[in-house]
Length: 147
Length: 147
Image 1 (tube, each protein chain N blue to C red):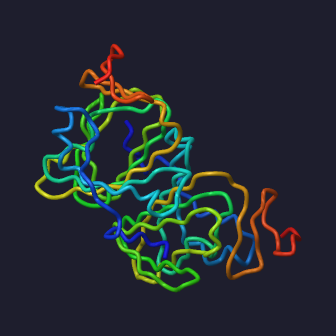
Image 2 (image 1 turned 45 degrees about the horizontal axis):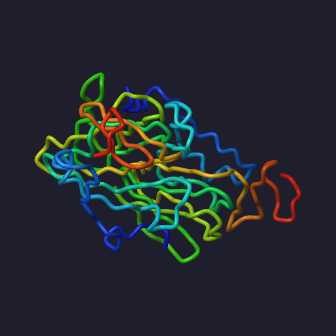
């Protein structure tokens, strides 16, 4: 049955980031849909952002295109050039290599739900607001020192 | 501005299929989001299905993973094993190579909107209910004769 049974896919809020950068994403509850449903050409995640939570630290990818579509609720997309309210049906594209860091922040009082797609090579990227990079070997400071 | 300005992307109902297979998709109005927004790792289309319209002939891909998320309205997903109502927030995955043909039919009285992602190689595929294949050289009958 190709309709995705979301209830059967593990939902986690595992942040991955070193402390204290993990704190703002504690309310990001996500499901990895691609491995659970047999997709290998791209990644797909279903994300529930609890009120107050961030989708990620503000970041970009060097080698991966990213795309999202808002499903329900409302979140603020924050980028170098400002703030944009994202509502159901709104989409955003982040071509790889653009260093215009982005994240979504749920400033509302209810859950915000979106689906995000990623493709390409996990070759690394950067964070706009903190002293961190992600590399093939993990998170580092901008001078290359590992966390 | 990475938020996609849908109004600035051409919307078309060009079917591509040879007649008469193009008739049921006349009310499928789509926008190709990837080329318009600089994505190359996967394809992404925003689709408005008018009442009565089909998303496609019922089909599968030999070399492309496909994924969709319903944004608004309601459509019926039809596959070998039956019918499933798709509502906002519902997702479906079709791993490449599965010959469980699928399409969406809008049996409601209002528009149904979804976003569909495709990745991998456009190496061909088949149609479940009609005498047609798609190949690298175009549409053919199942015996290989071109349309």
